[in-house]
Length: 479
Image 1: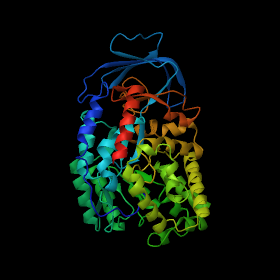
Image 2: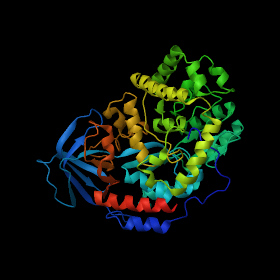
Image 3: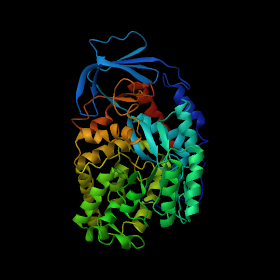
Image 4: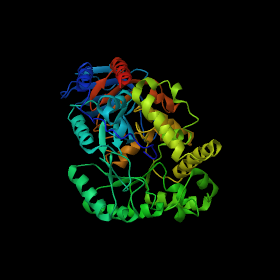
């Protein structure tokens, strides 16, 4: 998360709750019993979208054995011979979606991670996530249990707790004061088996460079915020793999960047000191080094305009835990308004438009992008659903629907260097797929019109998804 209000002092249980509810949910869905056996699944008469070039292969059959796609061919040339057959006539098949910035077991919402947050992703076609900061034991447990088909949720890439400064108020963080603290934290997390290291805004300057050096030494990527004490150019030189929330780019686009390393910065100040030449330089540097951007545009809009958006009118509110809506979100709103959004609303509205313009310029310069949402840490950022809204924000920034779709399909596969497993509908790829009732290349909002989902080779029909969503609404109302 980029900015959140200070969490409550009491610490909720992490993941040992509602296990019975989760088991009942799992066993009520066909083919999702724990430890499901390999099967043959065939989808016929689908319109397969090529996420590389946007071409649509009509009347196509896709055969899956176990959790891998084995054949893709015209339906007239490939007839199913065994297993379950799904007629997808008139429907569009895309790779499973990824949300590349999440927090499943994070602070005040951690207790809801297993039985609400994780299933919500799959209920909305999100078959993979990158977790950018969670309590270590539960997030490692969830990642491994999902991979073993003993827990219902998307496949996970995890950082464990974030590395933050000595005064961090996040529970899902390790306070770093000295360079030695940073090195020890990297070593510990690497030894526990995390997939990458996440740095937060408060990491001290010398400790940041120690973290970067140690991550390189032990062979693990470090990603996250450009800390307040670091210039964007320094983060690029240090090998930081991603910039989250566009942090560092605003500062680098101002002649006062050095002042921001220790002084106050607001969106009004960024706009008042904006220099297009400096912005062009940092964009060129990011493009040259192919530093991935995960801008979390839907969350950014909700943060900066937090006093202008009425989440009580959200038609998807029933999927949010009752305590999120009645307790956590109002507290977060107050915290944001008190500590961050001191500029008048028109200034903040201008800044939100400025963010979209930066994304458009970065994209034009061929800087690579990932779709991420910060869910469920933000206000009205509901797991799974918010990923679809993020894709719409990319289109608002000038992306074509195909380019927006790529940020949640092809690009994550490139980012994690697993194009042979994910990102396209091709033989050999893992069977994470989404069937849509309408073409997302005509309107990116059509990614929400989900007809069925395949997750690691296991099929969820529209009826399964309807039952799942009903259960999740019921569960959310009790939390």
